[in-house]
Length: 298
Image 1: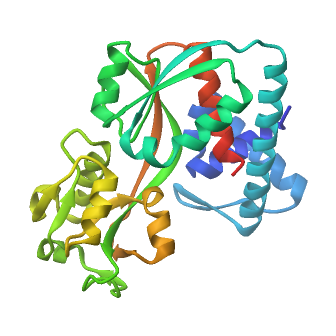
Image 2: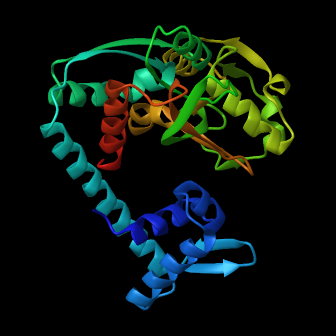
């Protein structure tokens, strides 16, 4: 139903690459260029600034992106609800979620899903990313939502939403009022870290390498197995920790925890849906579509 040119524009705007957009949409790069040019002619505005091999949105492009995101979300909602009218929804879905997702993200999704499809039974298990991948391969679950991505060829990964991991301390910490610290001073502080196999830990370790550090370089005061334990520990210690921004919304609003910016360090990641290679089963596909719609419409 949506204008395909808007899909092309949206993909280019998100990837900031004509080449990547062409690959993702299974069309040629000249076709991508043609669609963007037609939109620029239609709105009499330049949508992208080009600098060599790099592109960025113009102010007009940003306005169009905002409207396109809202429009595509509406079309997805229409498609979902109209398709739902044609099908009966029954069955059992075994779902797995890694720790951060199960604690802070998935509950409202499952509640909304059950409200719409009350005859579908959901069973949720939780653990770290490595455990959820093993459960999927063992066919103990049909669908997982995880924080990291391995190279296991048996598993298909698809993007869910973006997350940011930030450095956190309690409100009384010596760094609480510091605007920014140098990454090479991190070794002067004690850290609380997640266990081996944690998707969060893997992402942090990878990002630290961009500033010539790794988790092994940080003084570790204690290793804990979940985010709630880490937050509680931080409240009563002079240690610091890297945590998902999704996990500390309440504490930031209450002023109990503070975010510390680290110069030159940005830690972002995707949360992924995982299922075995091949087409996901209908209930898994239905939950994936519903979850994406839930966050697109927020």
